[in-house]
Length: 419
Image (tube, rainbow, N blue to C red):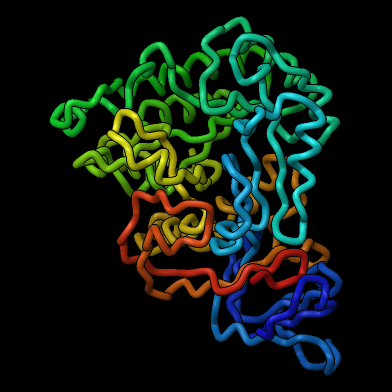
């Protein structure tokens, strides 16, 4: 594909690829014709459909799939997003200052759309302090698609009840962090053999299930829509399964880190593996995979939280939690396909179609008339994750040095190739 600057390409034809359609659940050979930023045709793209002056690209057997919609990132990071095939990032309110006012929501949503689309979540409480509810109705009008408790759980059940009631009236999803802070206050890990051996303050994994149980009961009582940004434990998934059977309007996400790593990865004092929620036991890791397999999990997100050396090159208890996950999201999630947990269409449903639909975005499909946010992926390409070589703001990944397969070849945003 020739290198063109944004705005140069009116028509782009991509041929000889494998089209992944999450809606129909199929992978078919063919191509895509993009005109004026919109998908015009899909399938056998013949020469007669375009002019000699149009740009034509040979996919050479690569996957052609919808751009990823990443839910709950903590930083606007266009280089990492583009390298990872992410065309839309749903931004957490944990910014400086927190996104707790309409003007701040508008500012966050005004990021240049040529590089990526930023969709903000509104802060549930003023300053994300968990004590006073913010003006969520005004922030919805300003462009927020959900309201979020941020990195923390709201301990005040009365406040959470009011938040869910108001959010339901505005048809806004409440995105919550599921850990009972009264149990996890000083903890940096999950109770188990490794934290005990390292002498790290830890908390039981049941802290997650306790938070989930409380919030599920309040959501059921109010009829509100509730989304757990990341779940990581068997007990929490059991609670969500049961709630869905009862008709509670609940969804949940998981990250590749909790699908592929257990708490063994924190030894010896690997601060890149200090995450929030923390890594769990091997049994909980397997339960997370099973929750993807059986449909309990509604989406896969990167948990992208880039941290510089000043936040990570510290003693374990002093290091900030979080990982740079945008660039490696698809690569790591492809492991689920290689291991036979799910198929390619289902993977892209979890990474693109489902999150877009959940938050009311008209994205994530490979149908004529849809916005041409598309990625080309060589799902068999071997490479090694090297933290220092990642494209984004920081390389704090617990997967540093891991050999992987599958890489994004090109990210196309609104019909325009990036990079």
